[in-house]
Image 1 (tube, helix red, strand yellow):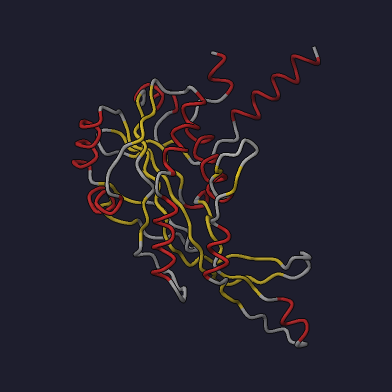
Image 2 (cartoon, one colour):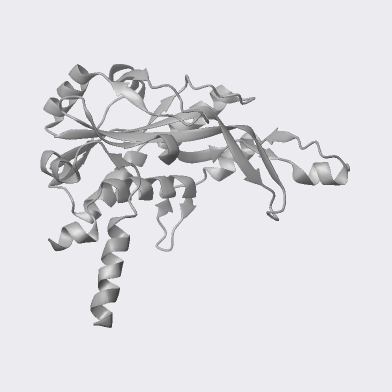
Length: 258
């Protein structure tokens, strides 16, 4: 009896920890999306980002993004939740211009709410690649209000910070969003500012300066590393992003047992 209870608890836990939100019933999503096309990761340069070397940052992200969607495809295939998952090719700049119709207004704390999509271009891309839906992942700069703590967790500062956040969506052939990772679920890929509590402490002041991390710091954060088998692993922050997306749109253990 204890084994059955423990297994049942694990099933419930695993089936409820997905990220993002389905915009249609989950059963309808699974029926509609048998073949999923995954686009190259896109960078939206129009966000309200304040960073000293903003364009260099966006250039770096576009370089780091190259071929990363193939890692996402591989992880989705490993879950065996779709008949097929296909990496789609194309120039990210062209895909961005053709697919993203408009950016939704940011939430009250500045977190991105995702995008409206051009239904005709979505339908054509699905038809040309013989897929049921598209997975679109977009990186964008944002200014978000947030409370951040010192390293010893004793001090806090609530203010507006500049970050790079990620939204993602699965769009059906008709251009409708079937699943969305946005708003409170939008993923913090890079924190570009930090409150310097140490400086305030040593200068005997309550005024805490918010500082930018350096371009070199950004680059080190986005470095790829060798895994245990000698293969390049994606930067840790991308690794966590992909885990969230895969968890969000892959069948749960409960579904697999049905």
